Length: 279
Image (cartoon, rainbow, N blue to C red):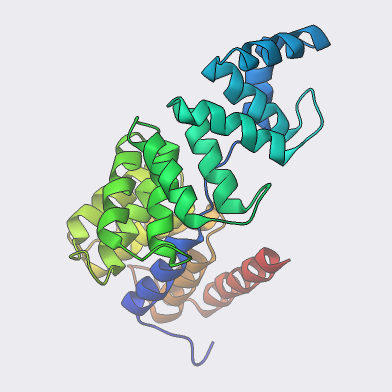
């Protein structure tokens, strides 16, 4: 147990930096594709009808046909065809196609990765109220991978997505208010958005909310609340929460009695969770 860090605020800074950029892009997953294509039935005739509608310029049909090629539903997966049909739909202003086209550009599906084009299409979709596009656009402004880093724009688009209830946007927005080098730190806002994500069951948000209560940042210092959120986060698999509980037992912090065996037990969980995550 010797040599382990005891500064909660240092853990906050390190963990927030990692967590703020770790969230993946929202994508069209296969479950969503299945849900959409249940409406088309199982026969080839339905797909042919969709193709005919797409050929006639129907933006929704073009989007669904592009989606079929993108994920391989009812037809062989073909990124080039997916891009062709999504572009036709996106150019007609269809928000979902704009979002999917942005994702293809970001991931380099069917062509070389192009973050500038990804941002262009995400923004078009986001401006029509698509929260997933808003979230993905905000991420691009934080990643410094072909688009200039801009935390002010990240804040703007995370806020749009967060207000639509996207948990990962709420998490990242809360973290941005604790770690940004250009957006003014605001622990009150951090607590607000981390709280919303934590209430939705996000373990990273629960851990960081616990840190705010432990340090009295944006809220009145409250050891019981800090420990409660740490425990919730630990149940959710967040290893930094396990580490924080280990420290509390080791040092007799957060209202807990000093208990070396329990400290060691929680430290073992912390190590095991890290190892499992790397597999």
